Every structure is written in structure tokens, then in C-alpha cells.
Length: 232
Image 1: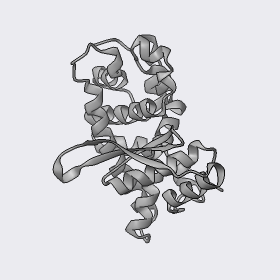
Image 2: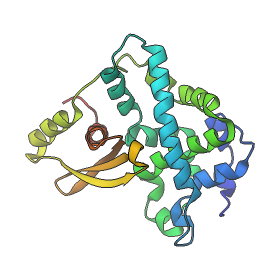
Image 3: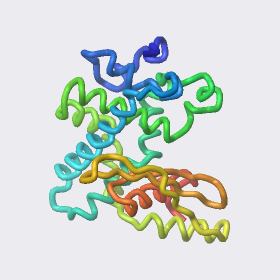
Image 4: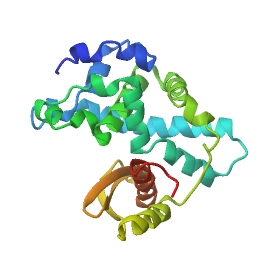
């Protein structure tokens, strides 16, 4: 296992958690590009776990904060909070981007700035924290990391992101966004879908969800954010 070395210095302080099992943090911060071919990266398993834990933590926090809101509103809000762009920003804020161990080629090609890698890094770290301390501690950290997001005046703002993205791309480029199925994982009773959204031959963003429809909405929302704001 490659050592994260100096890159991980101070990461525990920034995320607000000190690991009892430091190897979990190393696994979470090690990208597959830094490992020999054919080795199953433990960080990918932590990412899978962290994705589920994050969804549950955000759902629990939203229910506690807005007990009178319906499931549809809360679900859309959760999707917005945990989209790829949002999680990538969390990685930057917490310094996870700097602490990642990447293969030389991936690092040289700008992997440390790729939103998909940064978002996965944040989820992996949450998965590691969950393994080290359980749900209650992880939920408390998620509440801390998303404090400003949850307190935002428009936190419950809900929109049809696919329609808004289509309106924007038609107005700006006269083209329609294209949604490409990128991955499907998890057991049959809890499938997770990843979808990429492309516009005029360029990949704008990606999103994940429990259905292809949810994943497409997340991808469209992240694409709007990548285009420089959600207002047309």
C-alpha cells in the first residue's frame, strides 16, 4: 500500500476526525492509478460505502431540519447536496484533493483537479470514518461539512434540472444534452447508477442515484453548476 506521506499531513485536523486505524485513511486517499494493475482498490469499497452513508446522513439531517416537508422535496434537495460538483468542492475545502495519492500519469494529467476523482475521494474518506467510528460520528461530521449548505435560504429549492439544462443548451448552443449510462453497481435490491451528461461532444458533469432518472437529474444539476450558475 503506497503511503500518503506528506500529502496527508493535517488532513485529520481539516476533516475534523482523528483515525484510530490510520490504514483506513491511507486506503481512502489512494487512487487506483497508484496501485499495480489487477489489484482491487480498498478505497473503491470505501467509496461505495461512503456514498451510501452520505445519502443516509443527509437524509437524516434534512428530516430533522424539515420534518414537515414531503419526500419528493427532501429527495431533490439531497440530490443537489450530494452531486459530484458539490462533493468535489468539499474535497477542495477540506484539502482532500492535496492529500490524494495518485499514479504519476494521473497526477501529471490533472487528475487532482478532476471532479469525479475529488468527489470519490470525499466519499471514500466518509466510508473510512464510518468503518472507524460508526454512523453517529460520521453523521456529525457530515453535518459540520454541510453546515452552510443546510443553512442556505434556498436549500429546499427544487427544480427539474434536466429541463433547465435543456433550455440553457438550446438557448446557448442550439443543441440538446446527451445522457450516457456510465456505470451500474451494487446488489439488485440497492442498485446505484452513474450517468454522464454531454453537450456538443463535451462531457460537462456526472451524477449518481438509485435510478437512472435520479442519476440524470443529478448530472444535469451538476452540469448547470459547471456552466456557471443555475439561473438562466
